[in-house]
Image (cartoon, rainbow, N blue to C red):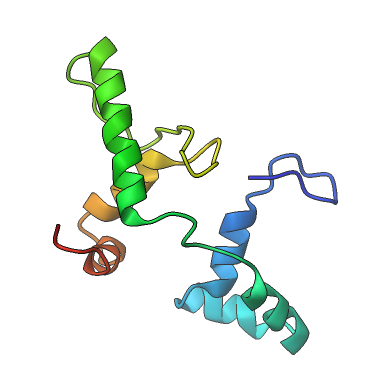
Amino acid sequence: VMEAPWGASAWMAGKWVNKRRAKGRTAQRVRAGMTAEQLRRVDALPYGAAFTTDDALDALEAEVERRRAATPGWRIPTRHVMEAPWGASAWMAGKWVNKRRAKGRTAQRVRAGMTAE
């Protein structure tokens, strides 16, 4: 989330890029409406892989430990947002976990890219 030059104070820039770089039908439809120069520019953006799966798990485990010290039995809710060690001030940690624990195709695809450790 960032402030946009056209005045939006909470533009979801990462989501905007994702909708143009993903492999699904929505991204293909959006990309079909872009010029070659726009495609080159969006593909050149530094997006994703800002942290590893292990970085995320380390941060989540530390958060659970900290929260459970104050509230025994605390669980990560889907809407949980936290500061992350890699600089994200509002990382949607609950959604990150949900995308890896759900039963749908997206979760299966994401889990397939994780190591067995």
